[in-house]
Length: 167
Image (cartoon, rainbow, N blue to C red; front, side, top):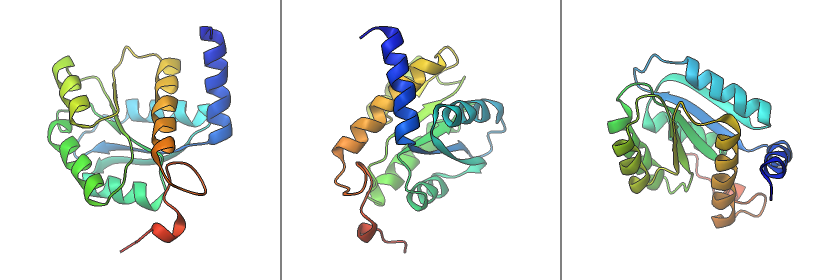
């Protein structure tokens, strides 16, 4: 498949599937412009973006992802808080038995941290040099992989309504 065909198929996929993505910024990170740009790109591609903004904690991100029936969690990282909050976020997902992919993006993530985050369970890490269409194509693969691993009757990767426990 050529790059043009892949790009065309990716655009159509986003429009047809409308994945739900929770987008948040950890803790006291004040850098909101990158998250807003990514959210706009995802929305324009066809995703439904649930934007939490700044001051999100791992627990609030997971609770929102659960309540919103999200397909993916995206976290914008432009301060070093991701170092401590990401493992906590992944642990919170495991504790709630939610198999949602988590992706991080930001300007401060080092190559060493990228490797550590991926090894720790993060599905992908994006930086300022990643292009929009490449990001969308990778996110599509991540979401499709998550859906194919799910046992939902209504939509791959999503728990059935009876399986939810809002307590």
